[in-house]
Image 1 (cartoon, rainbow, N blue to C red):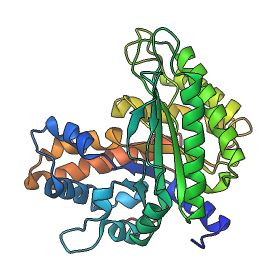
Image 2 (image 1 turned 45 degrees about the vertical axis):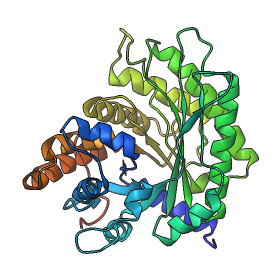
Image 3 (image 1 turned 60 degrees about the horizontal axis):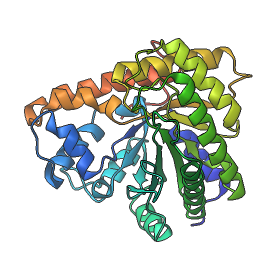
Image 4 (image 1 turned 120 degrees about the vertical axis):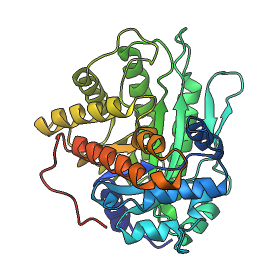
Length: 349
């Protein structure tokens, strides 16, 4: 409590000055990440892996925020320093995932709504005391072949819940990341994804306005507008950039200080190349695309190469950190529409 509008805006700008590392995988999701290297997820292995990520030398050159999981924000490094303090000491803003997963919307399968509003204010207070300065809430939308989903009902439900969450965050001095994700699964073309993304974002911003959410003190984490993962008509980064930016232009307020794209099911290279193309176009036409920062909040796309290099072995930590730093650098460059930066955002630590 007690954090004003100016501080919320300052934090939102800081956390999007580089890229945001999404390290908030649930226990089930991180096990899927570890399956490919034959590692069992448990609090000890999870802690060792997150420490590898957060202690990467010079990572703060390119990463400005990290989303933590409940387990992780309660953990410390080998020296007893809480992870949130480790990150803050590097100038990286610590954040926390606060939704508690999805549930079926009765009568509208496969539509799902996101749980976690009950007791949210109390949890945010605890997380703030542990160092969190922003939060994340993800809502998902599945596109079905029959065109009946996502339903109007789930678009409205998710928008209301996202806006309620965002308002509660700001009341408690926490910057909300609002994440409406149109899922890639399916064989639909890019125009279908564009229509659904446009509808979801329109409704989200209507509800944000109704709930008096301070737009300058939040971050939007949308999907890029892409064809379905099973579509035969995959497109160039330039085509993705054009369609994505036109959808955002029609729906997203220029007051938003930062847009941080999720990577969804894209590979690390695909997500990075699409982000670069988006920013090349945006920087060329700032009057059309006026947002202060368009960056990334990637999970798998930032981490996949590091996990492969690590393999769960302590002797591979340095190699894994090098892989993470290399990808973070590429993503940061892409957020500036460049293959190399004009300047780094701040000193490394």
